Image (cartoon, rainbow, N blue to C red; front, side, top):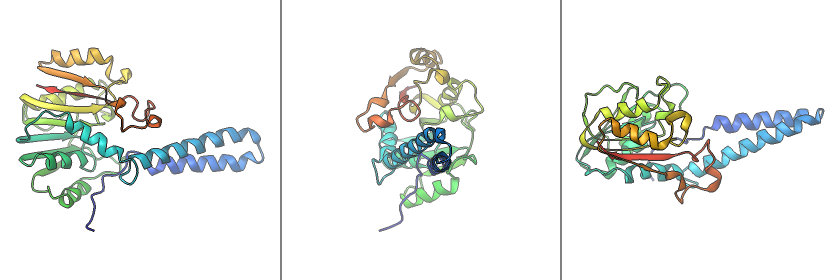
Length: 250
């Protein structure tokens, strides 16, 4: 078998190891101070939960990451001809899958690839080569709050779990607005994020109306957290319980 693309896992090994380590430390100390048994049990439970989540996200497990990526593409109403942008591409998964789906498309994936993430431009390019689309995809470093493209440059745009993480923007709605700026009139978009977290995006109905006020002709919210492929245990607010998808046409 040939080399397989490596897109990473949304659940970092560090959180599993750290919570497990703390749990065992407290467990050892709990032999002398029984009150530490409670935080020990809690830490070990957290470690076990995230281990389960990592397994569910992985291709060898529930392959939920794949399902979530494909959900974004399934909600992109585009004929696949022209140029598309993937905002916050990570290791290139959504960029590459869009290129595979649309054989006539040229796709650009942008990311900031900060130190806190296990992603890189090199990994993106390697994955694109493995998946056979390196001639139609380009990856470049950029910040989602200020995209280095002219107004209306793209025929389509996608993004998955990125907008809420853009640290340079206090108002996350402005990240959506910047993403839509580079989509041409009549172009389409499909963005998935924690749109149900009011502290980040406000009330969802108000968010949709705000987007329409920017001159966007068609906007629709899809509550993707209720899809069948997401186990109930992963529908907690800090995992996939607050996700939704905004799709439409400019």
